[in-house]
Image (cartoon, rainbow, N blue to C red; front, top):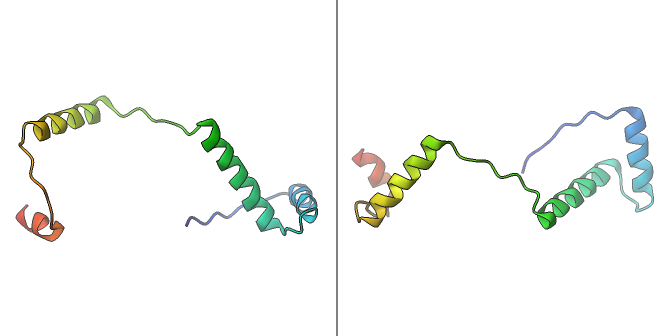
Length: 86
């Protein structure tokens, strides 16, 4: 969970509090409600940002995929053993 500290003007707080009174919500609950609806809309409209990876990272990924396809990789079942072998 991520905590956020938010500063609102008196006018913003009054507007949001007034909006929440219609539903019996206090100010924090109104803000959580608005954020959840905005998140829900972003997921529904698929407006979540997609970031392009760097060319260097893409090259490393393609190289790793090639090595895996060629059988040059091994399965790591025990993370402690893996780091001890480095």
